[in-house]
Image 1: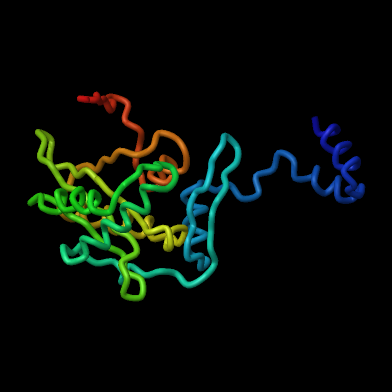
Image 2: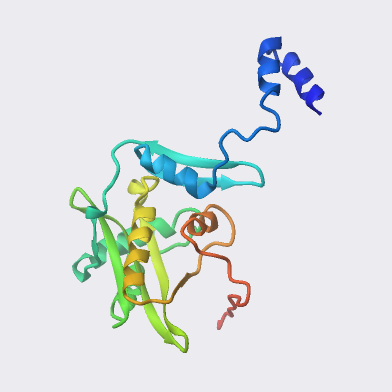
Length: 218
């Protein structure tokens, strides 16, 4: 196999020295690193956004933006006064990929307000230069084994996506609910695409014992 790789390298225009140097790396672990460690490394070296873009058996792709890092000081409790902005964000975010749902702003406002009105709801917003850029919202429910939290909405306005805001919101949110004594957190998301790996890097796992079922009434 190694000889075939070397022959291919020569055919591709590499010099003999380059081929020998490349072959010398075979079967050697230079820098074994997990996905979580890779993301932490990108974060520590000053990338404003660092997310897992795709993952296969032997390779991973990362999306990272070098620039000013956003601080958790931009995160604050959700506010009823910002309902219309949340609705605008929700409608625009969920009308795009991967959902492509035809949300109207007025319907999104009703959807969000119904969750906010729950006595057990909790949420955070992310503010950039005085403007709400994204939010996370849900509510808790008591079970025999303790109180669990369902994340209903995590949305970032398209103008602010790919800047690490969703990650910052989710990270802070999980810290907060743990302090509130929540024993578990769950959510519903797309079965394929970039969203499952996004949540998995925060510790979420696909449920094996339960499944989502539904029916149409019209």
